[in-house]
Figure 1: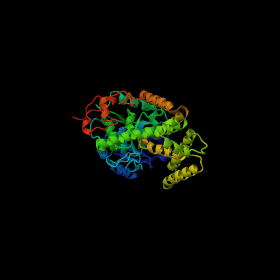
Figure 2: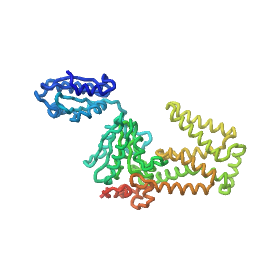
Figure 3: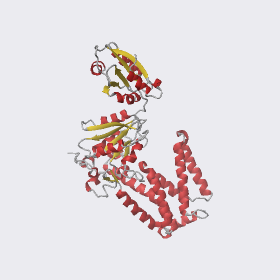
Figure 4: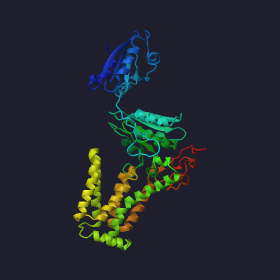
Length: 471
């Protein structure tokens, strides 16, 4: 039994043999089911075929098949032009002779990773569920957290060849008017062969895609995404990626942790202040060390200065080049430890750092204070892992400025950095909010984390039309 439109559909594939075809009858009408054997569950398909065999009236329609036979299956009537995409997603597509449309039945059977705690967002208290690479699983995790009729998810596909599923999630009545439309339009404007990860969408969602600083938030946990949606943000879920994007974004979000909301507010505030100090320390300390040893000996306490000067005897490199050389060594060790097999990575990074550092100091190539400064700076960077790439580059820039312009150069660079950050925005929300512009109501969840029940209003910087969330 052949149908011309089925033959045409099969011939549209480079190798038609990759798609399997099964024929059956529905009443007096001929029917064909097409499916991809590697993506579909054959057990479900056999159940469907058994359910259809010998059923239906003489003039059975797609509606009859959908409502009377496939009543327990996840099925829908779609246009014939959409059939190929459904087959490649693992669905079975049923054609009835003489009827232009077709029915798709969910028979997906993809291998997927189980739900585990994300490696970059581990917590002592709070939920440990993390997103996976499966689109449906991620959407389900969000829907499980937000059981409200106002939760809306707009689904579409991006990529000429990959047809990657993308879901834009928001809560009606809380999200800012026009924000969802702008996000959807920007994503749909992408004309690319394939989308492999959610990061592919970041450049079109950012106002300044070449900026050193992020303008799109990321999260790997459903509870974090649920809280951001409830503040009026939009979340973007991409099939194949465990990272969910959120907009608008404020830089202070990177200094927040999901665990902050499960700890006492006093301790959570202490941790946020600690993270801010650690990042500032990590970025500025190498440059300040270079500036002091190059131009401003008088700023260093005498006993410490004597110790440092003694350790620098015989070092062939100037302070600036010495610090940059040590940074390069640490970055090489870090990159190598990430790329190595897990069984070797940790051991090699520790041994490499100890052996290289100790040998280089004893050989008189670098000094002990320089190694200590970079070690402290590198550890401090990872108090906020989301911006390690940004802070690593800033650290190099500030070291160069300190070596060339001294403390005055560092002050000017800091002012220029703050001015630049104040000019950034994420879909209408200033990146430095609630500090620049100053929004007093949002300070309760900025650096300070006020008690949960005092956070009665949503962040004003986000622009939600529904201001109140408690009371």
